[in-house]
Length: 480
Image: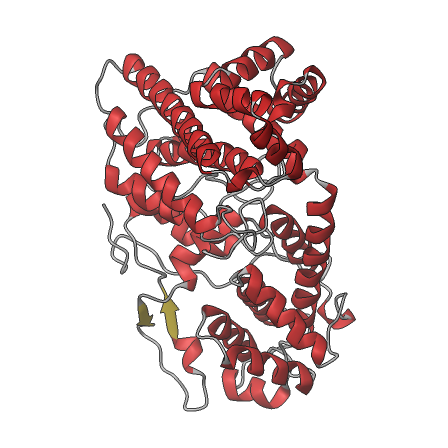
């Protein structure tokens, strides 16, 4: 995750990437977890794992891959669901041959094995689930599990009270609040040190009103809540000191204006101290409120909730609003991001159209050239996708013997779904730099495609019937 985008381009020196972010979320989760009496190891695991499923180009890439996944008949793509998919299926730490299976000589070994992912405990997997529901099960774009992973999800959520079926466990709540704290403060810091945000703008009444309106739009704050939260953020002592220096010291004021403020050691120290003050404030606020509600007693995994005071959430929404205005809505950032998102889409379409027996040999050569230079999970998933081969008659016989694989039939749809999901999985593993390298390789061969081939179009009525991993208390996953 070291070269995967958080919000700003990870190529920018000094910008926090997904790996930096996850490490800070882990540190914050441990601190908050200790304060409210939950298992430190579980919240650390959840924090380190929570962004594993994020694709290249951040949330913009996530949205584009989601649209493509829906186009080929899958139940979408979502970074949090992909994290669970990786932990329970893609990372083959445990592989078991199916019992009571009598293989024919010509059958593929792929049809005889089951993957159990990284083989984590129920509690660890539950702690990593932010959104414990399936696609379209609740209103909104976010969801945490693919239907292909239903068996693993049911194993993880076994014993959860009916009233909390759609409520994440307390360890996941700790991770979620730590995530909010980390990205709201880090993105604010990056915007200033990266020269995108002139700190003096924060003192401009017109700019303050823009921030208030944006926080109301995206964070649901009232105007009074937003004004109070903005004042509290600006009153953080190191930030107030930095703003005073920007207003009174000509050298720093000039650095603010020309975007080189990040080169000043004193400025970097002050903005770092401001971030630490905000993090401490947000952790203390949630810790104190939670302990007060539960009278300093520990909370069971599904017996309570992390209490975050409204004023703390409001301050994180103010920080997010500043990032929205100066980074996410930035014309320069968006122009580059749009180009990269289209590159990602062209890669996905090219791979989806060439995963079966009708593949363009030039596409396969380009991918071989790309994977030969890297030892990554991308190559493994691409080879698995190619091994599904639902259309070729000769290979069909080799893999499935006398089983009929009628085009458009049930088995054909199952295989096509499995193949499409593996292709999307492979694309999602790419780092930002790897994505650009693969795009350049495919472009050099002249084989990029920008739409889905007609034969790849999903049937109108498609059931999500991917083979599922056999999770049970007697399975390989440890239950505790």
